[in-house]
Length: 257
Image: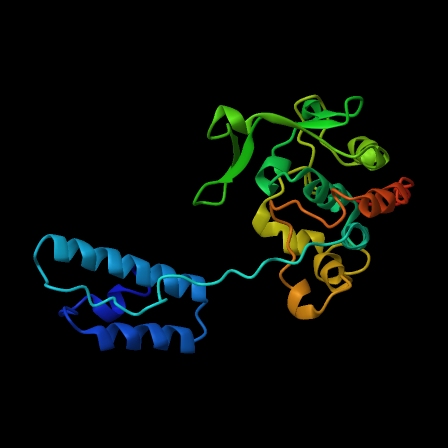
């Protein structure tokens, strides 16, 4: 509203001015603004104009451009098991397990960042989600309960990750049962906005290098991020399971923070 609607339509009337609305949309796209943002701005303006029509303030909604209220979301490429490990191997060691669990458990970053030692069961091969990390406007981080009871759940991780999990808990997790599973070099919480910089501390250039290692065109690889989709090719097929078994000897050699 403040950035893309009010500057163009905050003064005067747009009643019946379809061309002005189309022109604004075209200018935003031409300026390089992301299509999702342009679509959301258009949807907001259209909703406002619908209310004005209902209240008989205007006769007709000027937002009548076909297709302007939606956009096609390209399907994100799904990394293979080998690509997941290529990325994780490029990370700073203390963040390597973060990548692996994101890929093999489907947990979101906020859920992973809020895990405590007691939530990680190395005997049962599960992680239990009891809370999720959130960030205040001033940048402070805190852990909050899930929005619903369904958000509290236990998720299994592959047995092939056990060595990596054990190694991480021994060398990088905060102490005590209530200590966070993932912390920064100084013991502080890991925030999503800090990941590109912190993951970049890896010996091979970190997150950007790991993404570049993906065996796919750059135009696709650039869209692979550490987010809560947690999917990888082979998660549900025999080839993927075989690849994962081939990585049972997960490296525990690098203990640098």
